Image (cartoon, rainbow, N blue to C red; front, side):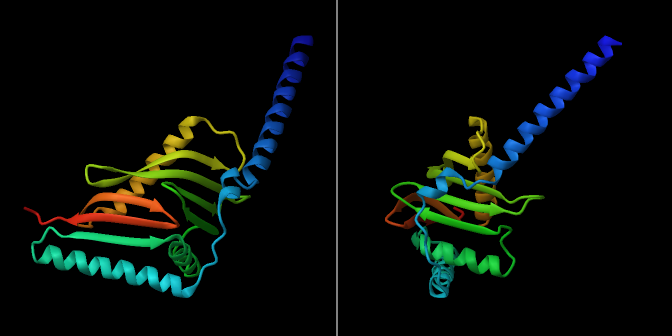
Length: 200
């Protein structure tokens, strides 16, 4: 009888500890990530969103024309973090971006990104600091720090987030006939330089 009572008490204590851990984790999960405090707020505008569309459209037309002519032509595209943030606001308003809030800063060689994602019960607030490298003519994102609220995360979480980001980038760029040769992040601008693929 005493053994059963002791067993039940141990289960009860473990249950209380697990519940407390879950509540603390839930609370930390809901807090703003530390990286967000390092970001500069950017006021979006419809003009900046239009500028983003025009730059992307112009670069695509230039790539298509060069590929159609069989030319290995150097293409350079420069976009600002204001243009990116303004476009994200526009996409969220249309329901085409599955986040409640998102922002990006282009710093000195690095980018900072924040997103609030709808999850059951409470919104997940994520943020990251990363760099973009070139590997075999394609961009590769390298995450230096990843936050999920203020939850303490293992280093493996950075690598998982990095892998997911790179899969998404590869999917987005899979049909763009451009070999990326250089990417620069500086003064609130992201500059991508590449050479069109001729298929030869």
